[in-house]
Amino acid sequence: MNILRRELRAGLRLLLIWGLIIGGYNAMMMGIYRGFDFSPERVAELIALYPEAMARAFGVDRLNLAEPVGFYAMGVYLMVVLFGGIFAALLGSGILAKEEEERTVEFLLAKPVSRVSMLWQKAVALVISLAALNAGVTACTFAAFAVFVPGGYPVDVLLRLAVAPFFAHLAFASIGFLSALFFTKRRTVYAVGTGVTMGTYFVGLMSLMSEKLAPLRWIAPTRYVEAVEIVADGSLHPSHLAVLTAVSVLAFGVTFALYRRRDITV
Amino acid sequence: MAAIEIEKLKKYYGKSHGVEDITLQVEDGEVFGFIGPNGAGKTTTIRVLLNLIYPTSGQARVLGLDAVAESRKIRAEVGYLPAEVGYYDDMRVRQLLEYSAGFYGMEPAETRRRISELAGAFELDVSRRTQDLSTGNRRKVGVVLAMLHRPKLLILDEPTGGLDPLMQARLFEVLGEENARGTTVFFSSHVLSEVQRFCNRVAIIKEGRIIKTEEVSALRAAQFQKVRITYASGGEGPLSLPGILHQESSGQRWDLIYNGDVNALVRALGERKLQSLALEEPTLEEIFLHYYETGREPA
Image (tube, rainbow over all chains, first blue to last red; front, side):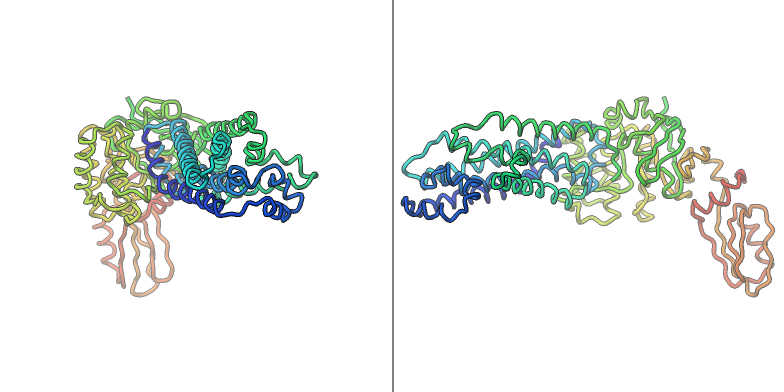
């Protein structure tokens, strides 16, 4: 458990910073919501600003901007998924890559700890960090709703929106974890991690705007935790979460399998 | 039981140097030197012992345990100093040492005692941040890390690199004490003289093969000197003296590799008119080139 403890401690500051930024963003946006004019005419005006394809992609047509949860789903939620996704990718890729880049892996693997145990501890540290990030952000979100939405809101829908990003984050983290086997420089692996997060997101977005790209829709982890679907369908879509979990398990599994036979030659 | 048994070890990987065919045995309680020029395969061999890399073929046993299958057990009993060490930048030396001790299940009180004992011996300030350490101090931290948990076997990859002569002497003093307590010491080096002084036996590795394993007493008799003579005028012929392994000239200058009585050399030179004379320890490469490769036995 030495490595787990060490990783959690070493990652604490970064976790706090990202949690505060994302949680703070959520709170700030709900503050803006409070001061906004949501007369039906104004909302219609806003929606008219979107070209039709974009309106569909962002779910403007299926969400009610005037409702607090609708506003959150459209204007805030995506940032939680994406920023959290970037944090997850950085954390996941860095947690292995840093040991090789700093040559500390030779220190670590000279200790009486098996490689599998080392990976387990790092993977668990990742999951705990992501869970903590999401819990912190969720706390900020609910606090912001309590302060800025005095009229009440459907708690179960907001709760679903709070749970879903974790699964996308886990997928991004596990892909980063795996990519650290192939890119051992942190600079490179960070670029790969954030690239995968943002790249798949944009591909997913494009696929919603263009029929031709529609088949690519399922490449993006973010599409599996789409706010529109969660709010409009009133469901977390367990099959979607299962896909993200399977991707994560697979990426972790492949990392474990390859790392066991890896030559450490830093 | 042998502390280390390596049998027909072969390792190829990537572009880096591998090892071709290594067979050697280190007995329990020995101080064993593993010498060879840079790139000969010393680090590769050592990494196999710790299962940092997997052998292509052949096998290694450490403390009677299989280096691949039982690596975790091996590492509990081995102290390892890598050739180049990396530490966690955000830690102080004491934290790093305590982190390491935690893996061996050392009691906090015992850890503290051992840290102050070793830090004292190596004059190491454990309150420093690891990222602020000089090369020599990083090395000392590595040495202390290797010895901290009182391992049965110390595997040290070029332990003297980066240490000043005073600290090198201190290192071998401490290694001597550990050895007297029963610790086996296996260390690599590319400096013959330190191996000569501190080892019982030595294996010489070149281009991935062991070219000789011998008692150091045999090597101790050898006194290799690299001699550079500049004569006052040209036209002096080569010296004829037993023990000259190699000599070559360029103008008034002669370069010799000499393995013999230095008095005889000085007497022979006394008959000639010199402008300058320099004696130094030859590098292992030079010794190999003119000694082991020509197949001459030690004088």
